Image 1 (cartoon, rainbow, N blue to C red):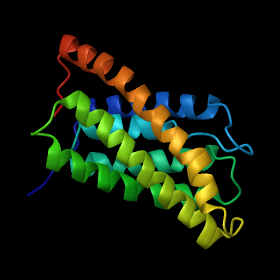
Image 2 (image 1 turned 180 degrees about the vertical axis):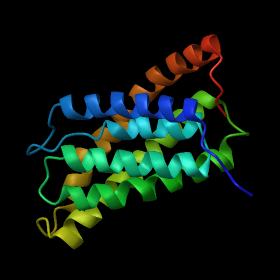
Image 3 (image 1 turned 135 degrees about the vertical axis):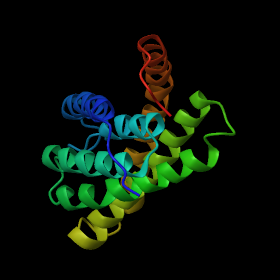
Image 4 (image 1 turned 90 degrees about the horizontal axis):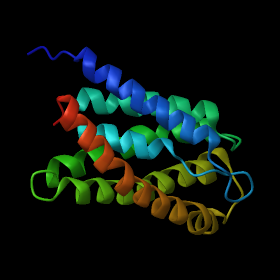
Length: 176
């Protein structure tokens, strides 16, 4: 069975990623030049709005590539390219498993919180173990960068999702 991608959805996902890229580039650094990953919010938004495997994988690869191009961490390119697809698959699984059972706003916040925590863990694992970032820095970086980013991303999603939901209802954009 052939599956095709809807051009309207691809355009909307492109806009979402573009907004995420701008937020990601202009996010202020938290510790030692490391910035929170603002692209994650938009990746999760795209997954929640269009939970279809092809869209999720395309979105994760594009998001990973943009994050890799804009990262300030030496070697962060590799970490971003590994982190985003894995995190997107986990978020996609959560959306599929819980999407029909819980409120969409709660789902958006939950996916963002859990997804950001997982993304940060994967990113730092790759940075520490594969790239060779300072040994023993995983827990410190997780506590000082990932946890605040997860909190920030979750709050941001609770603000962004209802706005996007209203816009999509008014414009009759087909979402899941």
